[in-house]
Every structure is written in structure tokens, then in C-alpha cells.
Length: 56
Image 1: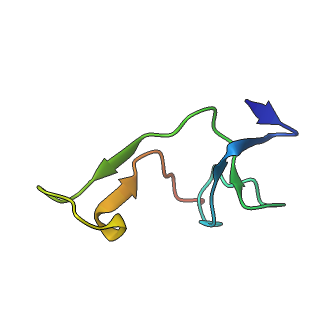
Image 2 (image 1 turned 30 degrees about the horizontal axis):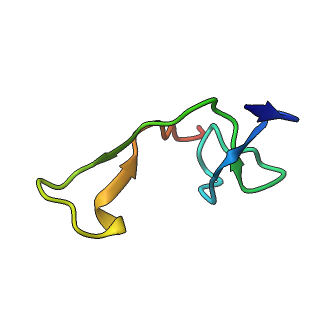
């Protein structure tokens, strides 16, 4: 649920994402998709936010 334009259930520190709340470390999307670039992920570094959109 969005509160003041941010989803307080999704914390995010990627401030160059177009969906970052800017004023605080939260996402502005209702939901995100998390995926992986590995065949068998075993560490958090193997996961990706597939909702990421570079702020251009």
C-alpha cells in the first residue's frame, strides 16, 4: 500500500532507480518482481530486482 507516494513495505536504497521514493529509502511501486541471474542462486548477490528502471 502506498503512503505519501511510497510503499512502506518495500525498502530500497537504489536511488538511481526511477521508482525510488527520493525523500526516503523506499520504493514507489505497489509491488516489485524479484528474480535471479544465476541458475542456482545461493547468496543475496545472486538476486535482482527485475522491476528496476534506470532513472534517465
